Length: 383
Image 1 (cartoon, rainbow, N blue to C red):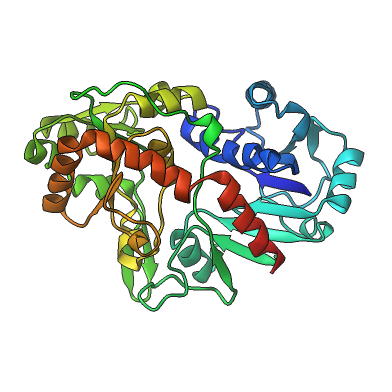
Image 2 (cartoon, rainbow, N blue to C red; image 1 turned 90 degrees about the vertical axis):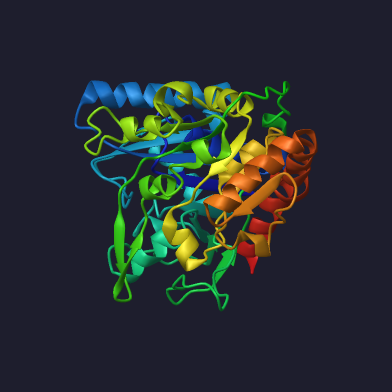
């Protein structure tokens, strides 16, 4: 098939190595299955011509590293989403070529609704791809966003529609899919440094959302501060690559360091997919805290970043979002619900490290291989 992957989140964020690594799994995995892809990147203009040119050049330089330069196009618009080519500047393809692709492609995967009407209807088969369940759904239910008219709606919220999950379905049928990795991109990391830290890479966000007469927390800051004392309790190194920034109004750098955390800048240690991979390989394991709303709403969300750790042969200690219904969490992956369980999980991983490393990679191969997961996603788009 010819599949268009529409995104509006990559070109403007060249230092987001983890974000780039996540999206690269799609074109690389689909091509490995024999499909053709066109990566359609929508770039809202910075209103600075030189900066726009720099971002576009950086985009094509990076996709060329993965053999995707001829399979990509950038549409520079005054603002996203993309609704029409009127006034847009197109790079990598001509308007005629893009029009032919839209009319002739078999499927559009629309990430975060990057393509809107009236352009959307020119794709004869359309699927909405959601990787932020709960957060997206609450925003749509509140009227702040739209999901548009698609033939299929896919989400990494594994528990959507189940009785114990509060994710609003928004009147459509959602089909869960697993995050995945293109395994050839993720060789098993060598080396077993006992003193390497448990790590993670995160956006240090602050956000609350009103929902059904209460407030749900979408803040990664509060997610990690809930476990502020863990390095002291577990008596081992922990490190966060968190974009707290220089202003740091709440003094979070100092707060974390006083409690035993190392803090580094993700825009430095994970500024490209390669550096992101290096950072993961140099870690002892991942300590992953989701947005609190994932826990409260029991979304079943599981992180694509955690899958990258698993594929690299690095164990994952993850706060439970209800993912245990679809992902086993006894070896390679351990879940927790409070600081005592998290500390016990650290001890278990350290005490049986080699076993958990082997189990981590095995989980990636058994459950999160792009070949299996992408086939399931394509099948869901046909139904």
